[in-house]
Length: 82
Image (cartoon, rainbow, N blue to C red):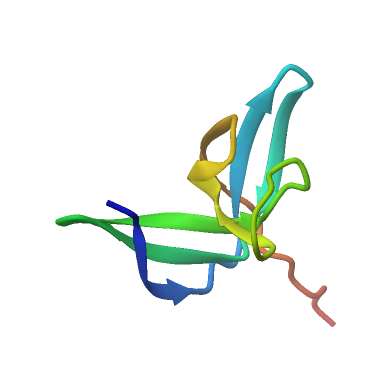
């Protein structure tokens, strides 16, 4: 059964980690997606589709990209105090 995106929410400060022969890579999440797969629901990050993966659109679920290794929080950019 295909997964269905039920809802999308902002993901400020979060990134997806990927591992390949070249080492670790961190990609900033575009958003979180609440994804339904049969009777279960999970949060999955949305990232820009790598050019090596064919398909429509330019956004893909992070866990569908080869080498996906989880999520990591990153610092939120802030303005310096005056």
